Every structure is written in C-alpha cells, then in structure tokens.
Image (cartoon, rainbow, N blue to C red; front, top):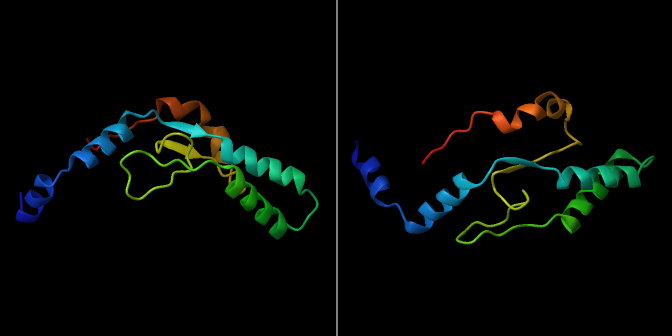
Length: 114
C-alpha cells in the first residue's frame, strides 16, 4: 500500500460511512415519475413543434418532479424518487431497451464497494 493510499484509507469519516451504508442498503428500482411527466406533456403538446414540446416537457419536470435532499449530503439534489439508487426513465431519448430488459431489473448483478 502506498503512502497516498494509506492516507485515504485513514481519513474515512463517519458521515461518509453513513452515506455509503444508506446508499448500498437501498433497493435498486426504476422510477417512472419522470417518464410519466414527459409522456403527459407530449400528449398535451401534440402537433406543436418539437422544440416547444421538449421545452414544455422540461418545464413540467422542473415544476412537478420532487427533488430529494438526503440527510448528511453536502452536494444535494436527487431527482430519482426517494433513493439515489433509483433510475429515471427518459422516454424522449430511447425506450427500446426498457421493454427488452424490464424483466431482468430485479435479478441484475449488483456490485458493492463496501
């Protein structure tokens, strides 16, 4: 172990350890709230130019998606539901992979850095 690695290992703070424990104890899941907001917005703006539709979808996300601030965070703001382990779905980007992989989300290999 090099001296730099030793210094990093010795500087583990209780706050960081609590954040890591919380992060890795949360369950992985897909959060559909953002996808629902985008879908609703696209339905409401049907027939309008794509630039307007994207702007309105973004506006809806900013106004209606709750931002979570977790205890102990110094850099805050999580738009992934109630857990930083959740994943948002972006229907305006690509959705083909969701249908293909949805049944495997629960059984995917999960790694831990603890």
